[in-house]
Length: 344
Picture 1 (tube, rainbow, N blue to C red):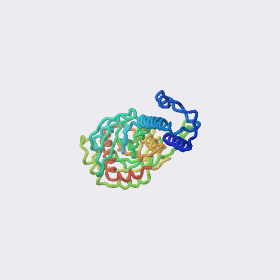
Picture 2 (picture 1 turned 60 degrees about the vertical axis):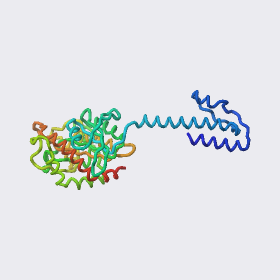
Picture 3 (picture 1 turned 90 degrees about the horizontal axis):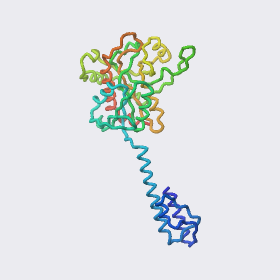
Picture 4 (picture 1 turned 180 degrees about the vertical axis):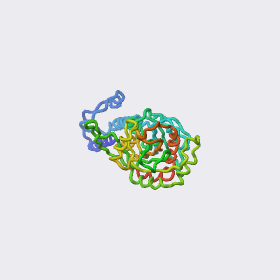
């Protein structure tokens, strides 16, 4: 708008130098502006004696345009920006994140969501972090929350907590940490005569970050420290040391407690190591972001096993929530700059 006004003024000035007569100019442009009317563009040019009036009008218009831009910017971007957003599906997972990440947390409502926000010192850098918990479990809620979280313009969106492991993977035990190398919806496909014909479309994590976290997951010293630093009840921690595993994680709306269903999913995705109800929603929201696409990380602890027909136990849930949040903290401490540089 400013360029248009300046262009008109320049044209008027050149014509005024030639003393060209004018017509069709509002007699009192200042009054018209005050009444909310925009002066119409003259069909000819003003004499030099009236250029001062036009300059006054142009200043009013430029100032008004600037005010409108500020107002619109505030209305459309009232939310703050954060480096990392951590999402959880359950309150116990949420509480563990706030305990594990050092910082003075402050409540902040952004986009209708209650976030705990703070500055966390990791790896010698101050990182702004926002933490939120879903109101309900499931992929729909996680996708909605992750979409809102993206509007905070984070460089990384992470989800921590606990999930179900796959029983056929003998190397995975309760309390172990699972890192999603790719995430997919195990309910995607077509149902024909009561049978699902799957059409899995996995969402992989960033290749650069995958390489970093694959190497980091083999650092047993870090994992031992996480196990040893647990300050909860002794019975809530597995007696064995923990390990970290990378592989495929399947998400779906229903809780899977059927061995045949687990085997069917495995038959189409042999790298399956975990099943949950939220991860795919977070991953999909991250990769479908229309502007800056944040890195997404899904890190969860194995609380039980999918398809094992035994009574479900909450014994290790809090430890798994703690261990997954701790693993995320340690990874960001060591590799935050690389994660930040990988953002597209």
